Image (cartoon, rainbow, N blue to C red; front, side):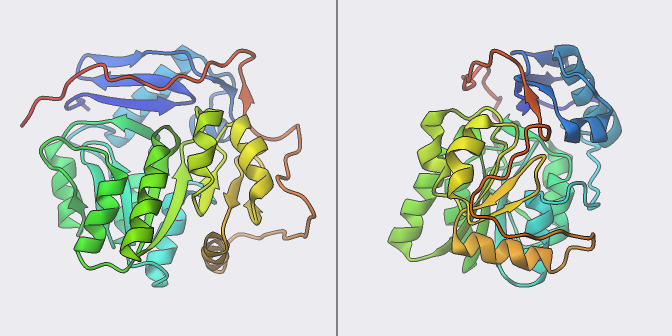
Length: 305
C-alpha cells in the first residue's frame, strides 16, 4: 500500500517519520526487547532495522497511514486503552471517547467498535496529516474529526468539543509525550464541572518532568518506562498485568477497570498486596543501557488541503 501524507510516530521508543518516500528512523529505539512486540511481530532483539520492518509491516499488512487503511475491531492486547474503552461505551459507563487516529488526528466517538478499529495496532502518534479515506471511514462510523484540514492532535480541545456536542461523561487517551494536556484537561474539568476519565498511554519515552502531569490521570499504562514504574506505580490503587502493567490511580479509574474485568473472557488471578508496583525483574521490556529521553521537535509542515 502507498503512504499518503507525512506522519511521525514513536515505535519502541524510536522516533519514526513515515511518508511516501518510505520509513525513516530518526532516533534509535530506547527498547532493546519487548515481550509484547515479540508476540505481535516476532522480534527478539529491537534495533533501528527491526523498527523499520515493524512499521513497514503495519503499512503493508494493515494500511497504516494509507488510503486503504484496514479497520479491524479484533482485540489485540488484554489491557489496552481501546479494548477497555469499547467495553465502557457498551456498558454505558462513559458516553464517548476522545482518541487519536493516524490520518485524522483527534477523534471524538461514541462507537466502541470504531475505537477498537482505530486503536488495535496503533502506536504513539506524534503528528499526522489528513488521509481522506481514513477520515471518511471515521465519519461514516459516527466519529467526529476535530480538524479535517490539518488532522491536528489536541486532546484537550477534543475533550472540550465532546462536551459541546452534548456528551456528559468522556474518556480521553493522552500520550505520554503530550502529558501536559492532562493538566489542561483537568483544569477544564474543574472549571466546567464536567466528568472526564483520563487514560495515559504510550509512556515509553516519558521523563521525570512528565510525572506530575501523568499523576493526574485516572489510569496509566507503564509501557516500557522505568520512570512510570518507579514514580507512578507506587501510587496505584490497582495494577493490571505484569509485563506491561496498567495502573489505576484513582477510585474512578479503579471502578472502570473492574467494570472491564467483569466482561473479560480469559481466566484471571487476583491477589491482595500491601505494595505496588508488582514488578518481577524477569518480566517486562528491556531498555538499552543508555537512554536519552528526547521529545520530538517539529520537523516538517503539513500542507493545507
